[in-house]
Image (cartoon, rainbow, N blue to C red; front, side):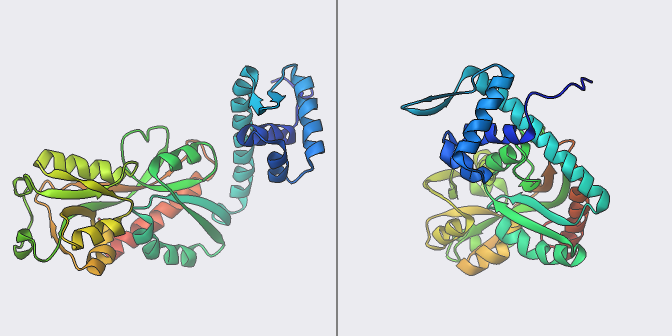
Length: 307
């Protein structure tokens, strides 16, 4: 370990990252709650200390130099490690006190949060959870970048950089209008009954779309051209007689009942998604994440909905 004085301060690194993200000195100064001249002076001092120019400043605005591209990535890593250090210190006092930023995907948030959030407030009264809803790809990026502490996701490929705890199994069900031929039958629907059926699915970017599309492709069902932006829109379109769809069981009570849809389970091996709470490897909030996952698992098992 080298104990010589460091060339830049953490605050200067914050200024560097802020300018890199905004490419605007005024906006970066606002984000850092300092005056623009102060921020500019500190950036110049950091560049002098490092011996390289991080930004090109010209008529076309602010651009990162090649050195800036490389060093800003390292600066983010240093700041993220510093945040983890502070979080680890807080964790020795009480890992479940303060604020945790948790992401949740849109096909899960409206249905899961009403079931678990009240219980979490009761069990962890000193904890405040700030919920952030977004698609899986965005939440994973924000999680790895330290913008959120954890995320409620469906287990899909590509999550290997993260660590997670499984919460529940959420089966898929077939949803249809009451006048559809399959609505008058009972019992699980076999895959062969879906051959050539017209189905509606979510838009690109939703992991549930990919999972449902895989089920439909194997069954020979045909996807319609319209793609919904939410499960609510999907249910309403099906209620209008457009086609069939697949819904996660956790959403049935809200979406299918509200739209007046008939739902039937799918025959074994019934497709399902695995719900998880994920966090960044090595994160200081891991003990808190595991405690939250344990609490949510117990609540979902008690509810008897997603299993």
